[in-house]
Length: 265
Image 1: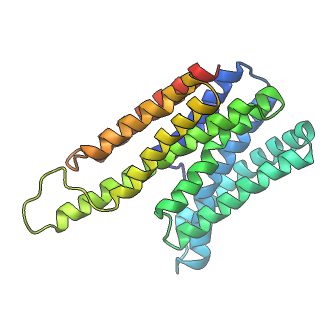
Image 2: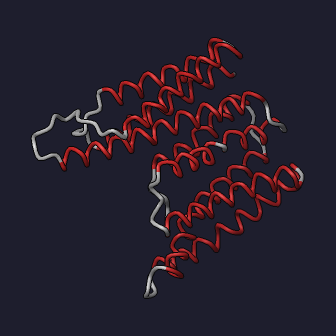
Image 3: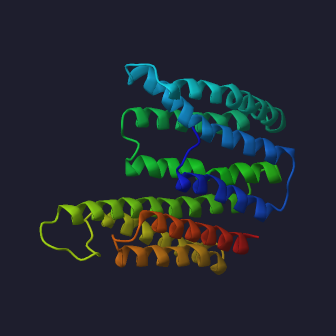
């Protein structure tokens, strides 16, 4: 039941940690937010297993029993952290943020049992939901919604979306290479790479806006990340193992987040 998507874990926890590094504070509210965020993320796999048992699988499977056991400790954890935040933040803020998270979780379950979980645009929406942990952490640490939290979230969304589309571009290129009858160079790319290119350009555009409307230093993180992703797109090598590509992308995401912490602190 433990999610194996390293990219999703990175999208969830890296912005959260970056927000705390900027705020430089730790208290009970932050622990409650961390428990709520983690519980909501971990709930997806058990709910997907139970939904498949209800609507897809014809025979009872052990995954469903395991999912019920996970719910026995995840739901109380979520209820306790949610009750704490309701008392501390008030109904409007806590319930509003919780409702959005629940809707995204339900959408993830539905898309998965519909076998559409690999839709790139759905994954981009999920990226926006996961990286919103930065704003939640900032709310817990500061008691409000500081402007830097929205900037951090926005840049993490753009960077994460570019990474998702780069993955899809790579997978499409691998498929195109395998289907090609003639020997093809390892850098052969599919037309779908335009999606990733457009997102990388969006990173550069965001950096330009930061220079124009906020402060020049803020352009550092998205500009460098966009340059790295543009290089990945330009010299894509489909022979590189996916594990290596994933570790490289995770390293870039951490560097991107640390650079944002540096300029926003």
